[in-house]
Length: 482
Image 1 (cartoon, one colour):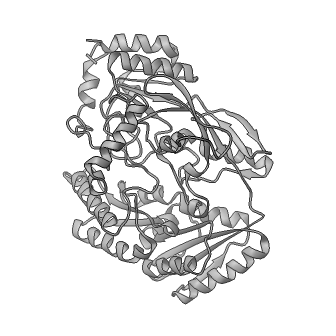
Image 2 (image 1 turned 180 degrees about the vertical axis):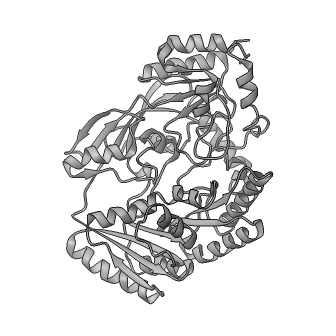
C-alpha cells in the first residue's frame, strides 16, 4: 500500500518539488470546476513538458491511482473534478504559442494557452481563432479540445473539432503520440476526431495545431427586443429558413437581461421579455443586405425595437453583456446550476415553454441564455445552497430539463460535455452495445479505468460519492493511504 507521502515524493521527482501541490489548504482550489460537485485530489502536479506528463502517467499506472487532466477549471460538467481523488494534472504552465503560420493559416500552441490570447496574437496577421466560449478569457485551448467547446460565434463556423488539425497527446499508457497534423485531411481512421471531446478519458493534450481564419471585412451586430422569448425564437427560425446563417444568434430572457443591466449596464432594454443578439459578417455589400433582411424578420415576428451597433465599441459592449451574463446572475441568487442541452430549432418554443413549467413546479427561478441559432440551450436554475435540500432539488429539476431536451429529439450536451454530471443520462440516448463500443475506444488509448474515471459513461459503484470525503482527507494528513 502506497502512502500519500510516498506518492508526493515520486511526483516531485518527476516534475520538481515546486510544482507538486499537496497541502490541504492549497488543494481546495482544485476540488471543483464550474459545477457544484466537489472532491479533493491527493495531489496536483503542474508539469511544463510532455515528457513530465508522461512520467506522471506512468507513476499513476504503476501505483493504480486515478489521474484527472485539468485546464483552467472553467468546465461546466464536472469533467475536471477528481471523482476518485488521485492525481490532478494541470496544464497551467504550458501556455506558449509555439508558431503562427499566416500563409498556411495555422497556429501551434500549448494546451494551457487561454483561448482569447490566440486570437489576440493572430490578429497581427489579420487572422482569428473561431471557437469563442463565453469563458474565453480564462478557458484554455487544451480544455476546449477535451470538451469540444463551442461559443456564440460557432453557428456558422463550427465548434472546436472543426478547427483542430493535429494534437500531440500523452496517452493513458504514458506514450507521446501525434494525432492528425498540419493539414485538414489525413489518411486512415480519424483518431484526432475521436480524441476531441473525449473529456480527458483518452489522454492529455500537450500541443495543438489549430486552423485560423481571416478577420471578416465587415461586421454588423443587431440587438432586437421582444415581448416574449417565443417571438425571439420564431425570428431565429425565420431568418435561417430564409437562407441566412449569421455568425451568431443569441437569446436572453427578461431575468437574464435584468441581471446584466444591474451588473454591467450593457444597454439592453430592461423591460423586454427577451432580446435577440445577431451578428453578421463578410463582404460589406453582403452584410448590408443581410442587415436589412434580419431587421425585417425581427419586425415581422413582433420585435419592439431593432438596434444596429454604431461602432466597434458599442458592439463590444453588447457582446460583453452576453458573455458575462451568467456571472451577472449573482445579483439575483447566490448559486446557479447551468444546464446544457440541444434541441432542433423547430422545437425551441415548445422546449422553452416546458422549461418554464419545470421552474414553476420546482419553485426555482430559471434564467435562459442560449445559442438560439443551433438550438443549444442554457437554462440556469437559481438557488441558495445554504437552504437544506435545495441542491438535491435543483439536480432533480436539471434532470427534468435534460429529459425534455432528449424527448424533443435533442442531445445531452452542446458544448459543456457529459462529464460527471450527465453520465447517468447516457442510457436515455445510447444502448448498452453503444456504450460498450465507446468504452472499447478507451482501451485503444490504454485507459484501463484510471484516466478520468466516472466521466461520460456510467461506471457504477464509487462514482456517486462526490462532495463528502474532502473533510476526511484534510484530517488524514500527508500519510493517508492512497
